[in-house]
Length: 541
Image (cartoon, rainbow, N blue to C red; front, side):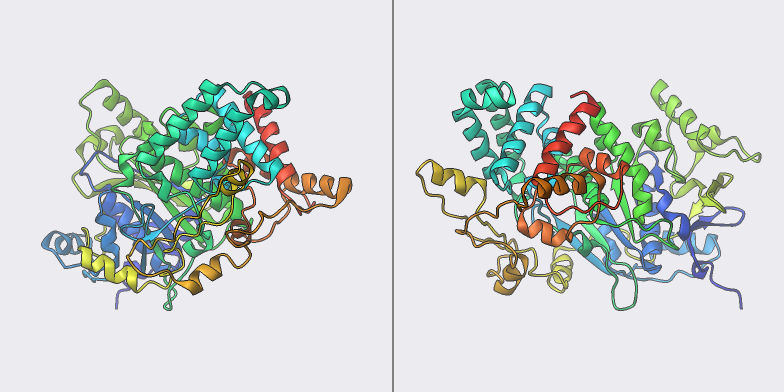
């Protein structure tokens, strides 16, 4: 009996040319790229890879731009084109469904995803608000003052209150931190208003996401496929790109160094990847490059999905070893340049001319070159992509609701928690009163007391004083600084989030990762302030 090509140990079947083409699981953390014009089959290729990783026990995260990836949760329907494709490459079509967890920043089509402003850090917040250098400088002052005064920045109202504090005390703060112009404060406040109008208020707050909830398997050992509903989020491209970059930085900060594993722990698909790089400042581009470069040792593979290979900067493109190139059209000079650039990145195949083949590929056909052996790229092959076993297409609203309600994470994130932070503390200083917002459940259910208690068990009650930084005198402070800079292990991500500790931004994490040693970190606020200064020096900001 001939073995099913899909069952080859340690490999994921991608498709067939003259021979079957596979992605080697042990090289799945060397990142990848899926490109091609609209309608050429990129989403199906992503779906095939996601199924393969899940079957192997690797968790998956993917942003669902059009709603099609939701079909991973349902068995395929055996449509004629899929049946024919399976026959063409010598397979029996086998419908299958996969363990899917739905997420949604807005909490409408899945579990809410939240982060605190402290976790995101000033570099990404400035990117999100589209601030110039001067405005970003004032934002850094705001975060520095929050550190020094123990003001937790959890949501947008906290940042608004802090900016108002800066405006009210600008004259006394300017002598210590630099110029704080009222006009600059006003500009940042207006940008916050734009962000609120885009729905970002639902993203910032608590309970913050525990990144470990992405890295799970089901009872059969298959990796959980985390699908982010991004159709609405894509209406705000800057919010979409910054959100996914924040997730990468969270993975980078939270996960330990593991080196090269037999297979990745998590594979992260970044769809519409060009949005990440459009108009990104040099400091952010450097941060992205370093995160992608170092993420491999965390056991995470990052796969960029975009229309044009020119959308990805060369410094990042050179780190993407597993390639699936669908058809490109050469109608304009830029299109022709993209075709040539794509062709030049492949190891040539003497049987055909790569640039010509890229413009001739049919829907569902691609040029495939995966890493093999010790990480060398395979000769590029013209490949028919295998049919996915799950549904190709969206779910109905009722199907989605049923899956969300059956999720093991139901209740953990659904109810928002609003504890004491900068807004409440500054309101009291001004002699006012700040009532916490009432918890809201996006699924129209009553608040889950056990869930809320779990999320905030290490946090003060809403009216309790904010937690003060740990002490220890001069030597204790020095230990905090050394521990933060040299990157020794810190308490778990969940404990960090629940206590509201200030997390480093993406760029700051890079500074820490470059100089790892055995020093221990027992505090964060002094360290964060110094690292922001170091980052500013490195980037010339």
